[in-house]
Length: 142
Image 1 (cartoon, rainbow, N blue to C red):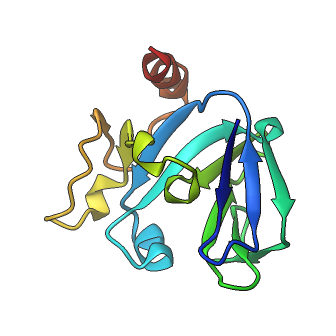
Image 2 (image 1 turned 90 degrees about the vertical axis):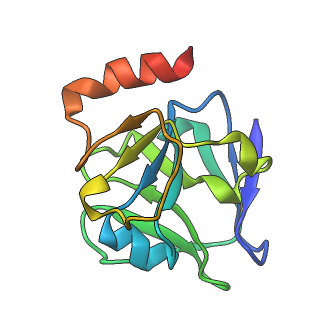
Image 3 (image 1 turned 180 degrees about the vertical axis):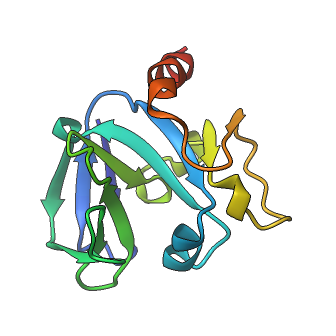
């Protein structure tokens, strides 16, 4: 079990079990929403994630992929990807012991800023093909 919180601490959440994978996303949307070179995520089954305090609000593009933020400080806390309601991407830096969540894969390297380095073991110009996820999660679990 690991807890996480937004910057102000009003939105708090808990994850149970082990993550399925960690990642960095270099897409321009993540660059803009994180005000950084990339966003960091830890991928969990949705059933392993619980908001324990505060009320998240939807931000970003308000489309099929839902990005949730703290309603007070507006920290980007987690994402539920479109068509993947059984999973949640938690912002890794909001978790306790954030340094333990080094990105295993990096996505959208086609949009990557030339100087941005993550040290991820696997890189993808866009998003990994759906048939690659099982093997990536198995490799991450080792």
